[in-house]
Image (cartoon, rainbow, N blue to C red; front, side, top):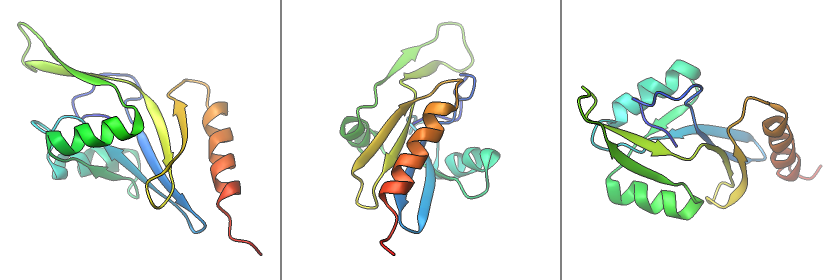
Length: 129
């Protein structure tokens, strides 16, 4: 979960839907006031053309955040052109095709945790030979 104006280093938060054929990577945006679907898609494509950017209404974002344990809040910024920031937890989420949470990996500078999670979810979702 992220937002276009996120100032965090490495601010992309990805939810990957994984099945036997591979996965779909999405960046879910937490700022419906500033992040339109078009802006969300443009932001996601900065990282890779196959990553999808998704936004929604506040109610939709709240429902998704509650389902996957995403913590976020709007923080007003005095004397700032941005007016506010969106403080948020930082995880990579791996989901089954039906939306079940398979793995939740903290966003870290050490890629080993993420690589291990990718191996686990892809190994567990291979079609039987």
